[in-house]
Amino acid sequence: MEVEQLPDQVREFVVYLRNLLARLDQDAGWCGIFWQRDPDGMRVCLTGAEVPPWDVVEALLQDLGVGGGSYEAEVEAESVRARALHRASLTAFDARPGGRDLLGDRLDVMLREQRYAAERQVELAQLLHTAATREQAEAMRLDLAWARDDHERATARCAELHRRIADLDRQPPPPPPVPVPQQRPQPAPPEPSGRSKPPKERKRRPRGSARFAGMLDEAAPADDTPLPTALAAQGPLRDFAASPRGARFAGAAEGEATAPPAPQHLDSEARGAIAACVGALLRLRAEGRGGEAYGVLVEAAHWPAARFPLFAAELNRAGLGADWATLLWETASLPADLLVAAADALAAAGRSADAQQILRQGVARPAPEIGASVLRLTGEGRHRETRALLDAYVRVRTPEEAARSVHDDPGRLVPLLVEAARGVSDERYWDVVHALRVAGFHA
Image (tube, rainbow, N blue to C red):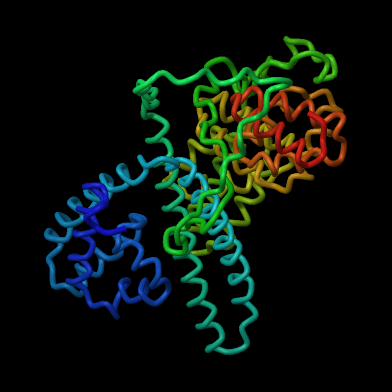
């Protein structure tokens, strides 16, 4: 896309970014690193086809202060101007059709990058103790430093993407299109005969280059409808799905199916464990022992769900918001029953965004695993948890992926999946029904 064709805010930021780079040594500092590690991503951002993450712009501004001869006050003023231009360009960029869907795809990629970088830190920290020579140790320390930088950048980009998604969710829905009158009367279409046909399957749309800002080259379309945001208004996860109908939920009573568990009171032992964990994380971070800190977070992810809201508050109070983001990712990998329990606890405490996030991430597991989890939950009579899991699943995954989850027991899983899709939207319902029929299942 030519610069002249871009939205005004994006074009203004592109001009600013080009002027900023013109003041820097292209082979030195962060600018040189970015050109070396991802030249394609740099070029894409300089054309305006993508907007770089803020951490990239911030690093370039650091180069300006170091190598550009600018004074600290000048760099600070430049940073304020750059931040304003960057935010305006992101707002215009995200307002395009399909912008929210694309942000969700990028967030999935960056969450995987964040987890990989955290695991890489653990691996390198363990290998460092086995170094046989000083040269090997120095090489491992350098790799460890880069892994920490990758993790910090991935964490910052996840937070930025969460903010952009939240900004879009706060926007009012667009007004319905005004019908254009026909110039001449048109004959009425013939009445359909037989049963109605589902709408035509949507085509996949190509995605742009992704390496620079954690984006996908191509991904299947998912439902753009956000998960409900006011979860705690009527109880944890109560609004995630419609009430069960008929016998599909094995005769679940209305009260049993919709009543969420009450928030649990934490005893002194639980509060002490949370305080001790936060203290350990602060100490490990201060000593640069990121691998051990990650191990502490992995262990905490298996705590009772009732501890999570207070743990989140204490981590953020201690300035460890990045560790809370990592813990959410680890929680999303828990078995389905523990995953929903964690979402319940967070929603009950008013942390609806966190509850939505772990459900979105949690249903990214393979389709057969989702089907097995649903069968296990329904077999235990946990119908509310089943509905919460399936509701998130049909919202986030494509209809074709959803259809693959019923292979183990179509007789039980197909009605549950169809009912969950119906609770999302008519469009999603027909998409799932069509995908099931294509896969050979009667819906």
